[in-house]
Image (cartoon, rainbow, N blue to C red; front, top):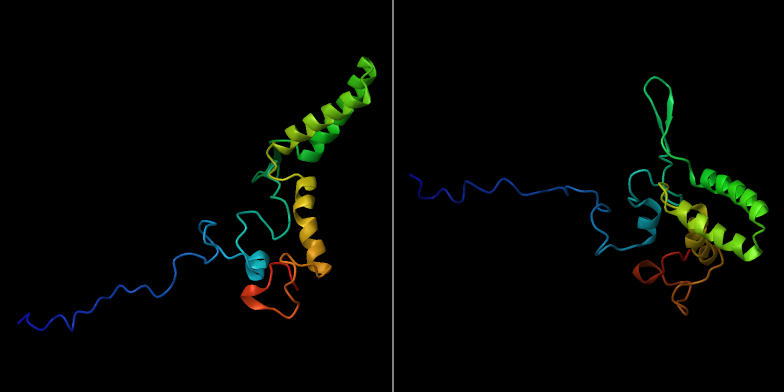
Length: 155
């Protein structure tokens, strides 16, 4: 009775659709082409070219706002005022001011906000220049080359 069942009872569990978004997962083996840069999965709260979402406050269900941490700009403004007063009191030199400002910038960069605007600007300005100035990452790649061989920000 069960002699010829192997042809009838076929495997039912072939997976037709991928379980994950193609851009989700680890960054290894990822192809950073123009489509990924523009539409790729950047992380929760990330737009394409913007710093991380501001999580320094939380809006409560009753309409109140719970401020959990000052923003980068607030920290820098407050530190600037404090250091100005300290400098007046202690007769500090320009070099002292510079060292203090660098220390405070480092502290502010490492607070809860993911990216300071200055870091973000440095990271993306060169790409903008390359893209709009028709500069190329691999020098000597002609403009008519498209597809897999074209560079990341070549338009």
